[in-house]
Every structure is written in C-alpha cells, then in structure tokens.
Length: 533
Ligand code: SF4
Ligand code: SF4
Ligand code: FES
Image (cartoon, rainbow, N blue to C red; front, side, top):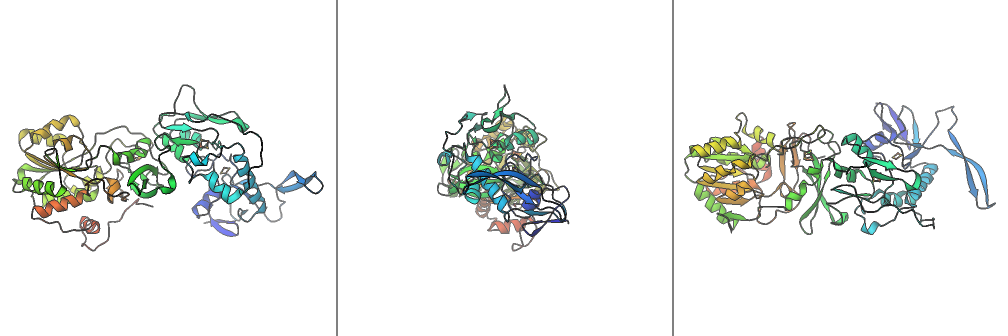
C-alpha cells in the first residue's frame, strides 16, 4: 500500500483517498466539522487545514499577508504557507503533511474556531448537544482564548420547526452543510439548502415543504453542533449521564446496528443512534428505527396474567405447565416469532418439539410495511431469517395457516412467543383455542387472547442474536434491567420446561448458544458476521 507522512508518521492510503480519510482509518483525528465519511466533500469549515510540504526542489506555496506589528503599531508584509483542507487534499505517495506539528496549522485552527464562535450564542447549558458538541471539544483542544469581539452578535431564527421531528437554531449553526448534503445524497430528498452568505447565512427548508423524509433524524445526528435538535430528545436528558449498549434495530429485517443510550439511574432508554457497520447500515438509520427505542417503555407486558388477572410469574408458569401437560401432541402447536431473538425461538422450539412432541410449527411477526432502496426492508421483523434457520430444513407455517388449523379444530392448544401477528384480522381465531400460553413483551392480539401470559424482556433488557435479511447473525447487547416482572423469554421457557418435567440442558446464555450451534455446553458462541464493532 502506498504511504504518505503525517507529522512524521507513515500513513497507508488507498488510491483516491484524501488525507483526512487515510488519517481517520489510521485512528488519527484531524479536527473537522463539515467532513463526514459518508458524505461528499464540501471543504467549507476550514477546521481541517493542514500544511502540505513542497516536494524537494519545489518552492512552497505561500500567501502574502499583512501582519500587525505591536511594536511599531504598523501592518507589515509577511508570507505564510498556504494551508490545505485535509478533507480535500488527495493523499499521494511521498506526500509530507503537517497537522499537529505545524505552528501555522495551530494558529489557523484557533482562528477558525474563534470565527465560528463570533456570533454563536454559547447557550451550552440549555443545548442538547452539550457534552458531545464539536464546538465545545475543539474550543478546548484548539482555541483556549476568550471572545475578543465586543459587538452585538448577529441574531438569527431560533427554535424554527423544520418538520415533525426536527427543530433548528440558526444561531448555533456553523453552516457546514452536512444536513443539506445528507438529505440530498443519502435520503435522496434535497429538501434543505443554504440561504444568504457570510454571517447571515442559514439553512432553510424548500418553500412549501417540511423536513419530512424517512431519514430526518439523521440530519440531527450528522449535525456536529446543537443547531438541529430532535423533537423526541430535546430537553429530556444530559448526555453525560447516559450509558450506551450496542444493539440491533428491531423495526425491520435490515438489522441496522445501533447505540442504545440509557440512564442506569432510572433504568430508562432515551435514544437510538446509528452504529457504523459498512456491511449493513453504513452510518445511518431511518426515523422509524431511531424512534424504535420508545417501544421499550410503551405498551409493555410487565406482569404475568392468568385470564387477564395479574399474578406472580411462578404462579403463571405453574398454570401454563398444568394446561400444557399431557396434551395430545397433534393438537398442540408452537408459534415462533420473528420479533424475538434466535435464543428465545430456539428454546421455545426445543421445548415444544422435544419433550412436548409438537409437530406443528408456525411463525408470525408484525405485518409488512414500507420499504425503500436506502435501508428500509418491507419485513418489519428483526429475526425472520433467524426463525427460518432454526426450523430448517422445515419451514414454519404462517399465521393464516395457524388460523385455519384452529378453525378446523386441528390445533386446540398453542404455546406462542411474541406479541405481533401478521394479520390482526385473523386474531379472532385465537378465541377458539382451548389453551393459549403466550410469552410476550407487548400488549396486542396475542397477549389479549392469552389464557396465561408470561412477561418477556424486550431486546433492550437481554442479550440476543438476530439474523437479518442478508443472513448475517448480529448480537444485540442488553442495555437496561428487565422492567416489571419481565424475564428473558428463553428463561421463561426453561422454567416452563422444569415444571413440565423436561428441564432444558442449559442454564446460561452461553450454554444455550452452544446448544444452538450444536456444540458442547462449554463451546464458544456462534461466529457473528457483521457483529457489534
Ligand atoms: S444545521 Fe448543523 S449540519 Fe446543518 S449546516 Fe448547520 S451546523 Fe451543519
Ligand atoms: S432500516 Fe430497518 S433496521 Fe434500519 S433503522 Fe430503519 S427500521 Fe431499523
Ligand atoms: S472538514 Fe475540511 S474543510 Fe471542513
């Protein structure tokens, strides 16, 4: 691989890469606002300026400048190197670049910082970006001086509603155009643009439009400062109190990698952010996925219920075992779920098919929805492929087939995992069942019809593996402690197995995963392609 020198260190690069790209890959941060690895180069913020040394025998590119001499109180002619934006400077073999090691660069970065903050309101205490704002970070790293301008700063629109999800503060905006380029290049909807020039410029929404495409929250995410804020997250939490877990989005079968930010002090999830995975979602998530975290706290099944009455989990497990014990295997069916992890589905299938002798395997999930050519998959279940891989070579039948088996009397007892069903209209069939035991996380047709309902932990409350539409098995980490009486579904299945006199041979997640991969209980987890980075 060819290399160039950055502050004396050899940096390998690939053909066509810029200095900032190669440095970024090598783990070196060249300060930047407008550059984003997933967007085109705008080179407008000038924070990434570096000094490019002339090749041997060539004169340096110099700028004539007027410098103030405090001794003579005169402006004098001077020359200084013409600095280049690292985000636009192509890397080339033998190039020598100075970043941290150049006094000129140090001065330029401080000047850029000072200019960006000239008209800035510096309302950090009430800004949602505080704690993760580049203006704050780079002031500390590259400026360190107090404001010299004594004039009234330029005032611009504040708290402007751009659409249902985003609020804009033009005074905080550094007009880096990341949001503009994201909308145009990734969301394929050029709904944002820059109006005016100089210190009165601002971002505007196209006339007659709102910022309302399917990826609006990404504009807030790519904004390096607090100019774009999310209606959902505004004033809800201080980011320094949040911890993060590496999760997988549950809203569709793309399986975008996410960071789930939660506050351990109140066991509450506050937001989702994309987690870079070039094979799955690159740097992005859709709005539906970004807001998916809210389901963790909405419409949950948090108690065990028998016939709608709240009971202790142990009591519900006893009753479920009583209802399922001795049922003719031909009349009993298991309903798996594309909304549950591979572990949950595997455990339910093992219990149903081995000790209970079930032969009728069905699977369900949420109904299909919108898809696009960017990320969104029409299958709104995170683990449809995982269920298929667990039941292979057999294919589980869908809910319509289960409904007709119930109507015909072929199935009278069901052990069901999950909450959503493909066609809510078919839910009426559930009322005809003699016994329906449901292990689910959310209220819905299944939970409503259940004779015994067991509260399952959501994906935020347990570790789990999910196979996306590309067949990649990805791990989603536990963020918060299980809510209410909820427990991981596989643990509820194991407890049911004990009561049915058929204890499952795994007591931990590692043992369960080993069983799934056909290994001994002590063998390692299955290999995770596209796993958490
Ligand atoms: S709103 Fe944010 S992302 Fe958009 S131009 Fe301003 S600073 Fe950049
Ligand atoms: S595309 Fe699918 S997996 Fe990705 S964020 Fe959106 S809903 Fe979630
Ligand atoms: S990051 Fe290079 S000019 Fe903005």
